[in-house]
Image 1 (cartoon, rainbow, N blue to C red):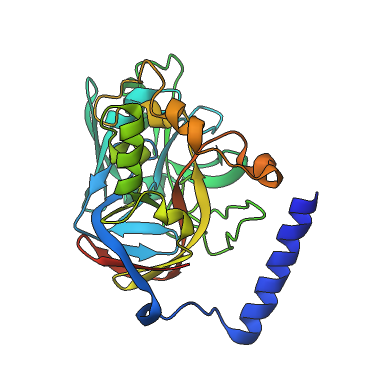
Image 2 (image 1 turned 135 degrees about the vertical axis):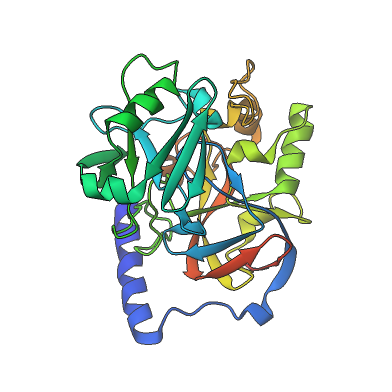
Length: 320
């Protein structure tokens, strides 16, 4: 109960403060360099394969590559519940590539299919879908797409549907009191905010504990930073990258997804690296246990505070 009250008071304070004084952030000129952007990724299909790019445009709902928004496509069951690689690991091998006005999907054993978003809009098959506890509207991509995506997930015996989050739709708003996630920190079908950052040094430190290399791609970040120290990201409150400004709004909780090889779709037989993460990256604040549970923390969720383009090679500036 006190967590809800704390969050409510924080929301009231933020609303009044920003109305009176504006949304003030540290001057980027006063922030310190902490690393360099080494990789930028979007995931057009939730749980699908990443697309790497030398540059991304950052907007409130998430990063965009040309006309493609991060996690604007999602697989659901017939009732609208979201399906992910946590249960169907082969989903990480489904590739969604942008085309003129749509997306081309491919997967081992399923061939390819092209999705036209204008056709999806014309079909206007509106469905209520679920991402965790949140319910939101989406457009069903039709029966042909449903048959294809079902064939692309052979470990699932029941049917699946492919849904699209149109640009015209209001972002899904996360709500995780007492963390400073704001109404503007929404996304399409992402688990929380539209941005997640990983630190290569933290991944390397984890790999040393596991005693084998661990790929940063297993953690599905949009922004990967090199040249920093392990877990320095825990202390970064604001980050300036290229033209964009971000706020660290919540540590990223980790699950079975981290045990899936992002290239092969095979789950690690020993449950690594999640098993090792649980040994030293659990939340140690009892007051936050009801929010974070027993999931280890690795990486940070970001809220966008100023839109703009970011590029591989950009210096990352941070303020605590």
